[in-house]
Image 1 (tube, rainbow, N blue to C red):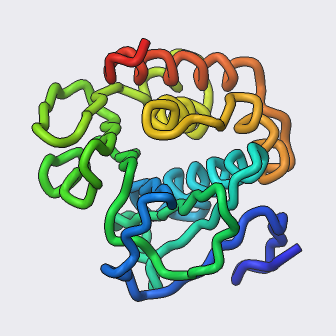
Image 2 (image 1 turned 135 degrees about the vertical axis):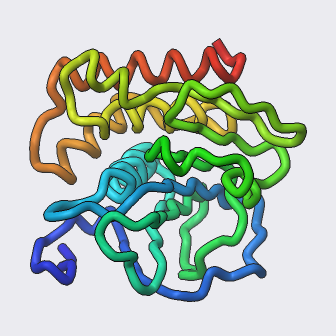
Length: 216
């Protein structure tokens, strides 16, 4: 077990580092990068960071090597921030934060501005926006899905729905992570079982995102 600054312990399957250098040299396309954009929470963990930790845990559950990286100094509460999940089929040892991503998940609808969102995607990358606004890019695939609305429909916290949207984007890019992996990682990281309503939100968000990407 490792310990965060707030004194809470977290399973070894997630390795969280705060380093300020977003390396522009790391362009290994065998290593996938998923960037979660959101805002720092007030009095609790931010949605984007919670989703990043759980998705990294799901990747580890599926047999990948995964790391979570955040900027060296977290933004003040309410300010935009990000967390990057590095995922590889080989053991990850480089602690650098990639400058380009395969997937960007914009958790806060107010941040869903294109560009700058999508500017750091690799060619063929996927951008998931938590909004219904239809935006089309030439070199990237965009899914505009009201993820928070799905969570509200099922009367759940938004993490499960955002994880469903991320899973759909991952299936388009790489595959190999299942909904069950997410459910197991959710249990290990939150120390709670995912409720049936949350599983339904996860499934619906995944299906709607795949449809938006033309993958269903």
